Length: 324
Image 1 (cartoon, rainbow, N blue to C red):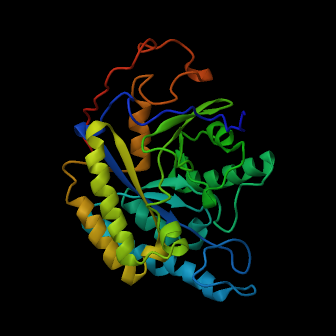
Image 2 (image 1 turned 120 degrees about the vertical axis):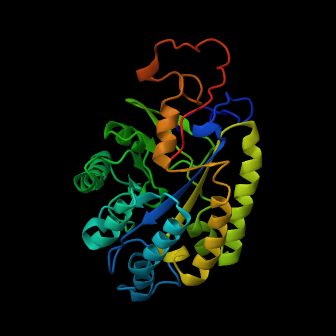
Image 3 (image 1 turned 90 degrees about the vertical axis):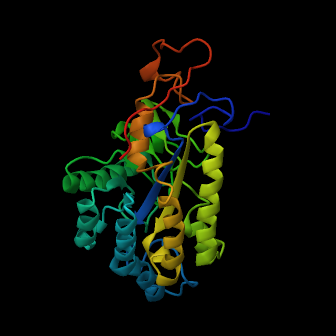
């Protein structure tokens, strides 16, 4: 029986793939995806601390807004103390609502990625024209404030339509974080070429683990440490990406922040043997690898030409650039 398929990528087991390394000859890349989100008052979607009542739902709105007023600043201080970069997944409405917060991450030189207009809405379910408007509106705000369009995208609520990768590629995006099916970047097919999928976690993510599964602060920190230690061992056989997805109103709470500090300190202590980086730097490194190295890098409209590795297995590609 033929099942419906997205058609974006083919099956490729993690074992037996061509081996390459990250800059500096490292095999494990680690990045922090920090969600800066803004929510409409009295309408739309939003995570809940407690079951919401009639709108306006002051309790849950204020809990989420704590992240922008307090939690994000505590996390920024933590990242500074450990010299950790961040990939900032930003709702474009944050620029008007909390410009001081955006400026603080800009001063650090952090990467900004498109994350829709607000997490009060999903793009899934929109028709093509409306979705294109959403993507363009969010992109234009980031570009106007940062001087360049964002290269990466994470949909609000990890929400897509059947056309989202096509629209992102056509809007100039180089990579997307919505798909969590692998521990390595892979190429996705689009109607106009290809777009890179960079791994973004749904297990190592405070919303599903803490809000949905009721994991406490120490438990989430232990999860981060265990995940890191295991991936560091597994990376001896090939390159891996470990993302850590954080939300300011969740891990920015003091009782969770204390344990997150322990987990991130554990990772930072191994910085000489791993690549602590951003999602954008990972994508840029992969885009520079020879054709045929990364799964899905053949058979697209923009790379149909025969490459130097078009016959047989692709050789190892060992990165040598310095890490930053």
